[in-house]
Image 1 (cartoon, rainbow, N blue to C red):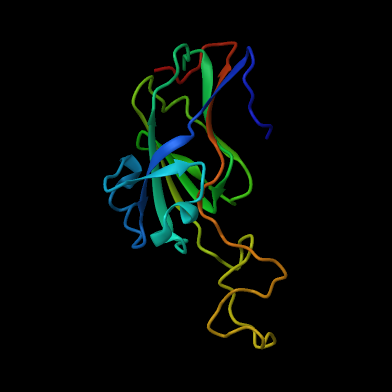
Image 2 (image 1 turned 60 degrees about the vertical axis):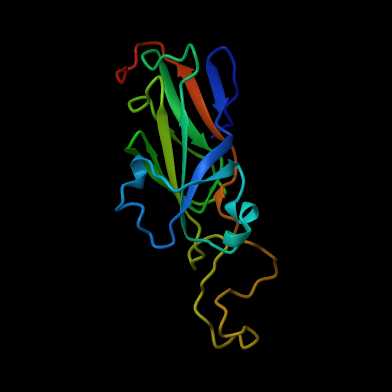
Length: 193
């Protein structure tokens, strides 16, 4: 997936800035309907890790919710363009909604992903919501929460980190820019509002 660049056929808008953040250690956001928006927020810089921004949540790797609002730039026409949202890095699991509609999910904090939002985007007052979960697990990169192995006696049995020759902190959140792109279509888009 190539990095989108503006040219006569494609425009991009960077959604970097301050978003709303709400931590969800009890994992109640889905049942509470936070995918359609939520209150009790604190501002968070995007892109950046929440671990670097909030001392009281530095070691937290669980669920957190982000939201931001945006209008389409002047001249963007869903009837003539395909409009996409691209996340360059969200660590580790991400689930995304636009205006209350689930767009999809992505696993892996080191690769970009995107969704076609043409059928769900409005000209004004769009609400983009992202649920992020960064827990360590044996099947993630890097692995964590690995059951203690009796062959590794040098590991403190109270810790559940694998033996490794690297120093790594599992930073969580939206860690790279989030971009909107509009690509010209030769024919009218069937999703036009």
